Length: 202
Image (cartoon, rainbow, N blue to C red; front, top):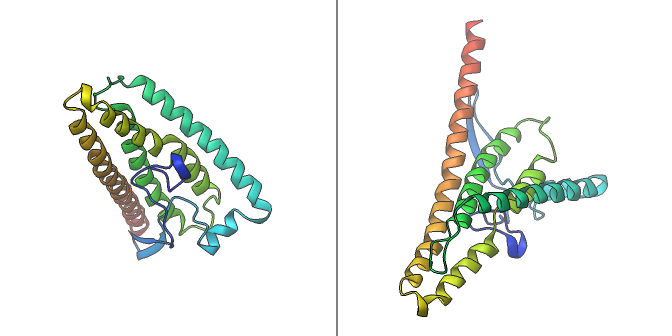
């Protein structure tokens, strides 16, 4: 979920107080790049992205991305079947887990773009803070769990469903982030190897 955006932030993608790095292996060996898809104001280089003449533009792209993400989440939740008072909240579960998978993909892409000076400066705030921050939702996750717990007296299995929902969302979200990042990195590495092979054959 989104990287700690207040009450509507999401599980599984907490804000980092440092600047994390990951290795993306290419033809010339491992290189490092940022893997946090969010903008972390504790990091001077990222703070600069939201300062000066770019500040209002960053806010604008975050707002636009957030609106797109929220609309996407609402549309997906309408498409998925509704659940009863003691039913498993599949709609928000799918939203948050799929959002985490996309965050994993973005982490790998941000690491790749971190090696390229031409990478769009607004990519991370638009997609990480905006689109995926608006798409995923921690508040609905917590609200659904509370509703299940309150339904306990009238639905004997509601507490078990709530526990499964709370734990299942967190575990699935972590797995989705890891899988999304791992698959994307593997595809990027395969592309780099293919390009390097083509260069060697010329």
